[in-house]
Length: 87
Image (cartoon, rainbow, N blue to C red; front, side, top):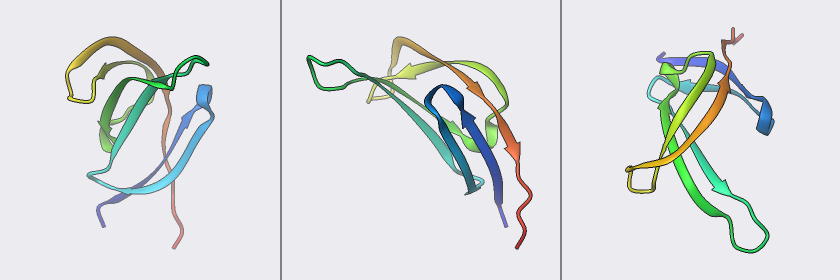
């Protein structure tokens, strides 16, 4: 059916996903600066095909809104698990 189920855990931000996604699914990470004096400023973004994600610590280079590289990187601990679904 072209779909896989995976559980992704991002402990530092407490984001838990238990989704069945198509093979062409993309995960987009967006980083914003949070301060009290100004609105939350966009720092960068990164996009990954879910199917290509592997468990481990990753240094993720960020891109600006136009897709050009920025000097910031995001350090991520990614845990990907296959989930058996009962229909």
